[in-house]
Length: 209
Image (cartoon, rainbow, N blue to C red; front, side, top):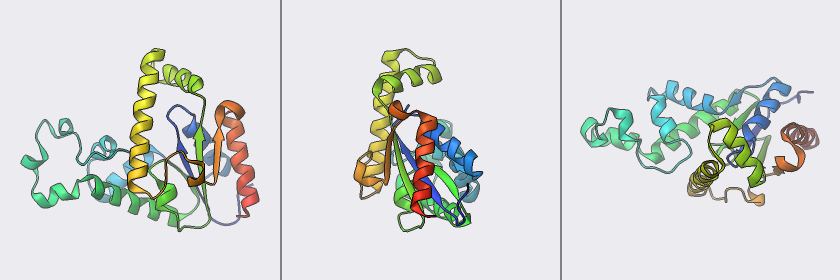
């Protein structure tokens, strides 16, 4: 049953752990919006900046978007100093954070990644969750989703996890994946994606929202 008052669930996740799957089940069960890649589209609409710019810098600490998105031209050539500053990693993070806060003010939702748990740390009620899984299961999942072999999947997992960890640790005062950074940490290898979603729902009920 959907809680009586608005609430936010944030989902941090290891790459290949099934975190988005957990988030989708929760959003469907509660009939509330899910923001993952959808968040990028909304930030783009609200700022007027091409969504590909945000996608390129999504959950990474690069200072500037990839120049390939700008037709091979450098930012220094295309933009004034002021506009380049607007497209710095810090500015893009600030724009994204402002959109996350507006989304939270609109009502209940599930937000995947983007340090939403830290951005919304003063928002109540907030249920912050981190999804993990055993490496073997993560590799199998990425092999299937990305159509690659086990070695390629393992390399990609380590790369994405490092990127997400660096981004989270850089912009927050917490540690990515550390149990004390979240209210609830769940290993989908032990309980499954559906089981993880059910556990979060039980927690929401106990949370008293």
